[in-house]
Each structure stands twice: as C-alpha cells, then as structure tokens.
Length: 486
Image (cartoon, rainbow, N blue to C red; front, side, top):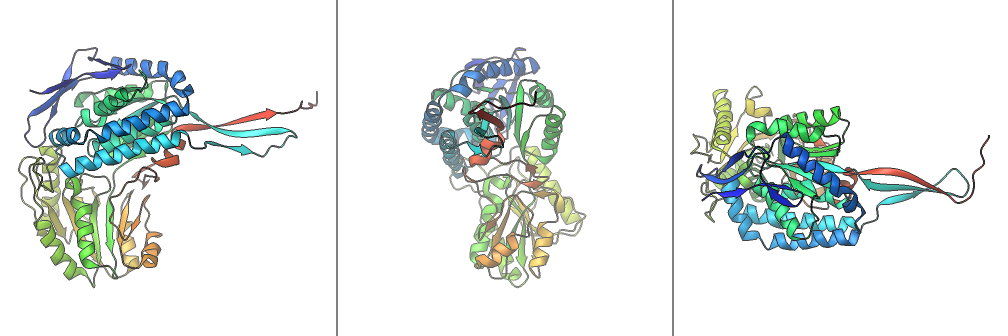
C-alpha cells in the first residue's frame, strides 16, 4: 500500500488547495511507493504566508534555544538510520551504505548548524568620528526559498535548510519530484519533532509538470529574500536568472564534469580503489562523481587492467541487497540516457573497456570507456551515472589542460604519494574543491562547498553558509554629540 503524504505548511500536514496528488515511484520496481500532494501557486503563497508570519519571532529567538533544536534533530535523525535506508531504497534506489552515509553526514550538518548559531558573528569597526563605535552585524535575510535534489536526498535536503534556519531565516523548501519525502518531508518531520516552531520550515511538493510554475511562484514572491538551489546546471541557470530578475541573492551548487588525476608518482592499487569509489558510489549520481580518470602514461597499462577488473567485480541491481554496489538510477529514462551516451561515444570511435550494453530497467552496468573523441556527447556532458572515461597524459600540463577543458568546475581528485607535487597541480586546476591524494567525492559540514564556472556560485558549509544566508549591516553608536555645519 503506497504511503500518502500532504504538504507541510505552518506546522500542519495539509492537502493541496486543488486536491491534486502525484505519484512517487520506486525506480527499481517501477511501482508507486508514495502519493504526495501536488502543490500549485496558491499553496506556495500559503507556505510563504506561514514562513513570513513566523520570521520575526524565529529571528528573535535566543541562540541557545535554536541550538538545542538543531542538536535534538541531529540525534533524532541518527536514530532513523534503518527507516532512511528503507526510504531511500524505495524512493531513489539508494543502497544501504549510501543511505547510512546520508544520515551520518546530514546529522553532522545539523550539529554544525547548531555550533554556528552561537559562533561570533560580526566585527567592530574603526570609526572616523571621535567617540563613535562602528559595528558590522550579520542579520537574517527573511524568507528563504530552498530547492533540494534527489540524489543525496537526506544530505542535500538538510543542507538546503540548515544554514538558512541557523542564520535566523524561515524557509520554504521545494523538494525534488523524485524524492519528495527523503529530501523534504522527512527533514520537516525530524525538525518538527525536535521542537522547531510552526511556520519556520514549510514543504511544498509538486507534480513534475508543475515544477517550473511552482518554482517561479516561490522565487517571485516579494517576501522571499534569498534562494538556494542544488541540481543540474541547466535548471540552475533558470533559477539563477529568475532570482537575479527579482534582485535576490542565490547560492547555486550545480553539475560537475569532475576529473580524478593519477600522477606518475601514485600508488596504482590505491588509485584504482579511489577511482572506483569516485565513479560508482551511488551509481555515479553524485555531483562530485569522477567522470574522467586521467592517468599518467607511464601507469596507464597497469591502471587500466586493474581498474577494469575492479569495475567488472562490482555487483549491480537491487538496492536492498546488501551486496549491491551499483544500484538503479533514479529512473529507467535516466539509465537510457546513460546508455545513449555510451552508444554515441562508441559510434564515434570510443572503446568499451568494461560494461556497456543495454540497461535493465533503471539498472545500467558499470561502464568504462577509453578513446572518447571530442565530438562525442560524453566528452563534455556530465555522465551522472555509472560511467567514466579513462584517458592518459604525458605531463602535468597535459593533465591540467584536460581537467580544465570543461565549462564546469566543481571538484577534482589528484592521486599522488608526493603532497608537494599534488598541491602544485591542484593550484592549476580551476575547481571550487580539490583533494590531494584522494578522489573527487567528499563533503564535510564545516568546509566551504561549491563550484566555479558553470558549477555555480556561493558556498554552503560552516561560516560560509551562514554568511550566504545573512546580510551585513553597518550600525554606529555615537558616544558624544556630533557637531554639524548648520
């Protein structure tokens, strides 16, 4: 029997004003997992009404009261590991290790938000006038519109709301149509149980065909004063343009065409394990996944053989099977899109090192290609699936040139046993994130997370997240009467 969920507005579960609902499908079985309310613009207004009404009291609440809510929510989320594993398996095809990682990191994001609430915020300024005191004070924006994606639903659902709430804002979140519960309603459930006041967080779920209309209604509302979005570059561009049109700041974390660079001084066995994790964790559906594995030509033959063997051993299929490494993609159409990238590349001269072939439903085999030409779609397109390209380079300059040959600039991994060498290469790669002697997939709640170029702008994480969702205000105090010319 499918789960039924309504909108979460003003602390209450309410149906859409139209009474409409939409289906949330299990990507592995294709069956309906849940039925959720399908919001329209009228529901967006109701959610913003609730957030706006709750803002003044929430912004004025004591830091210690806010901190207590975040800490309790973190503990509550930690205790829901098994529930989340079942939810993510059926809603997005997530494997058990991936689900438990989502819970652990999301709980720590809440704890980092709790710490940020009571961290020093602002500066004392030198003043021109005698006896004056100048202050630079951080203050919340107001209502924040948040858009949470499906691929790391609990991590990114929590990230979408934690820093804005910690900064004293109220939030209306629009979760992905592919994970309305895991990246939206679940987060609201946990925070509600932790004591978050009514209206501070609101969730509007929607049917896929209404996504653009709902997003526009949310961003365009005059009471919404900030926006954050995590997702594809194409949709993010539209969100950014809409926010700019309404003169609202936005934090955008978008797609990546990430490289893992294996330098000539790397440990090959370690490089193989690191690259396999980077490419195939969550079936490659991570914005940080390694699309391109660039290997120094002196290690190419050894690496290719060992990497192909490793990838061939990865079990694909049922996400509820504890032995599954590569689960299904979010939908059968997503798997077919990946298969189309493979067909196009092979048709233009690429070689299949391992995998390939037609997907089974939403399950695409782990696939590695070599010799992908520049005119193949895959050369520049984000794979966002269990697919990568292995290429070689002759020197550091060649590696850097290929790594930077993309409009995106999210993350990069550089595998080397020489940190000085790795750092020198890292300084030349144009990404928002780089990891020396590690692969491209990593996230920590206290670190500045975001990209460069078409991978977006602004930063989540730590004090950078608080700064992104607050304004700096100049306040002066005159300790003596000023003298005026007239």
